[in-house]
Image 1 (tube, rainbow over the protein chains, first blue to last red):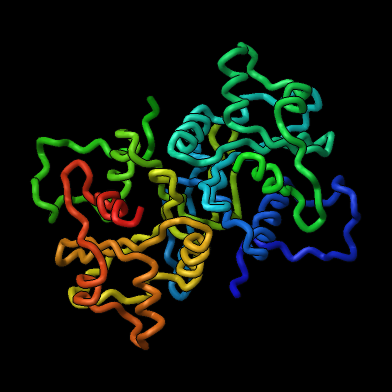
Image 2: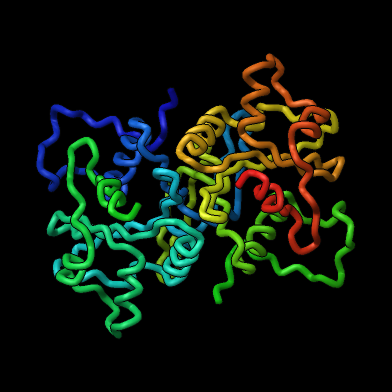
Amino acid sequence: MIGYPTKKKISVVSKPVGTANRGLSFEEDINQSNAAFLDRNLAVIHKKPTPVTIVKVDYPSRQKAKITEAYFKIPSTTDYNGIYKGRAIDFEAKETANKTSFSLSNIHPHQINHMLKVKEHGGICFLLIRFSSLDETYFLSIDKLTEFTNNQERKSLPYDWIKTHGFLIPYNFLIPVNYLTILDKFI
Amino acid sequence: MIGYPTKKKISVVSKPVGTANRGLSFEEDINQSNAAFLDRNLAVIHKKPTPVTIVKVDYPSRQKAKITEAYFKIPSTTDYNGIYKGRAIDFEAKETANKTSFSLSNIHPHQINHMLKVKEHGGICFLLIRFSSLDETYFLSIDKLTEFTNNQERKSLPYDWIKTHGFLIPYNFLIPVNYLTILDKFI
């Protein structure tokens, strides 16, 4: 059994039960959910590493290589992908502190293009949007997103629109972002 | 049209036609092939970023964030994945200068476990193995690989065994590693 790096060892006893103040970031919540899916053999979905351009690497003797100069790159794809029930899964996850809307500037246009391509080839693509102040996370299919952007000039998705066209993702202590329950509607 | 970062601008005129001495690494050849697949809308397959643990980041004023301390991580998954004809694709690519065998130490055990998991959920998983001295690249399915490792004590795959149980990947100037032609046998 491999200790997957995304698996968080969280103390079950000492944590409060609510979703707020759990001290885990959205990314950690998703990683923990993905680790749980893997453990239960439900799906194989991983976060991709953060893309960086490595400029300088030091090789100190007897020590491991140390990167001393690198820069963050704009990602050309989404952060998460994998497989569920035989289907290729591809999604991007973003968080906002805003309570009334989600700015589309959070998503790079080529990430949307990437998801449209994956969808065209048979994959299932979506966004996970967390409204951190409201402690709510929504699943929004790429179809609904493009329906909006094709018909609206607005550069942000209103909260009410997301509530109507997306799906609230159930919270569970062991699987904080159980998006598979929503994915089942699309398979 | 997005200029995907993996797409190489190579000069068609000044390069020799043979596969040797083309000056492109195996990784570049695969990236170029994936870019061609994307251009022709055949498949959406990308290399994942190199996983690094970021320790220190400087934020010089008016300049972009600079990572000043980071370390290479052992990857928990494979380097390449995506979608082709509705199927999730997952593979690892390795090169050897050895002419008679391919050492299995090139592949991390959890990369093999990862591919077995992806396969179990309906994906197609394989290795691309380049014998750089022979200028040959082989496609080896995860099934053939586990067949070998389950029946042999050897820690390396003999070249002749790969030749028999794998598939030689055709070389094409525009698509240096056209593994889709082999994948078609598995779909």
